[in-house]
Image (tube, rainbow, N blue to C red):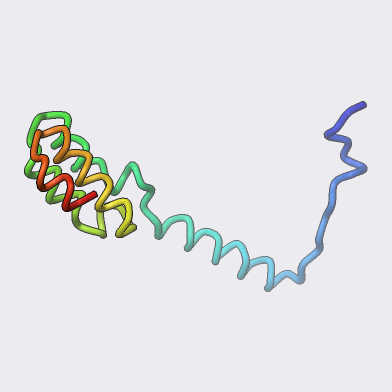
Length: 92
């Protein structure tokens, strides 16, 4: 049995202008958002190079991770790796 049988595919017809608006909205949403790896790239490179203080500062910025939770976890993990126990506990 072919699970990709085209006879089973669902198709929804949209009016021309609605289809155009839908495609435009989709393009806007996908192009406006930087991915997590893109936002955290500089902080990760600082971490990999041993610039722990810079990495902690970058990860603490919510704009880097896009999440308060992830900012604390990422910054706390770097502080833990750097041996800054008290700072790691505060961040985690």
